[in-house]
Amino acid sequence: METNRLRNNKVIVILDTNFLLLPGRFNLRIESIEDVIEKKCLLLIPTNVISELNKIELTGSDRISKDIALKISERYEKIDLEGPVDRSILEYAKNNKCIVATNDMKLKSDLRKIQVPVVFLKKGVRLALEGYIE
Image (cartoon, rainbow, N blue to C red):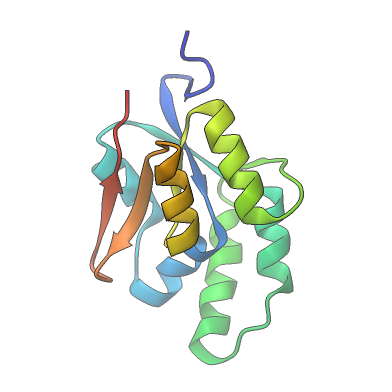
């Protein structure tokens, strides 16, 4: 039974820190993930991502992106993850067979090695999906 990947008939998508910064940088709508995946999604934000966003020091337009990311994060359900963000997302995605939204090249590569689908911003223009959703 697909209880881990699906919740209420929605595909679970974990958002990482740099993905949350994209709306402020590229005028991206987080909800457009559903257009790429072509399924209804349950977007989850790890609690350690929120902590990381609060801790990072940014200036100028990046500071505005951070403020937008924190505001956006209020709309979505949280998932309690601890420890280093990338490692915790990698483990959660592996164990729960969900999709991860990230633009972090290392995390994306590590996820693809274990066959976890990844949503990312392609050429600063549109979202793309790499990998297969069962």
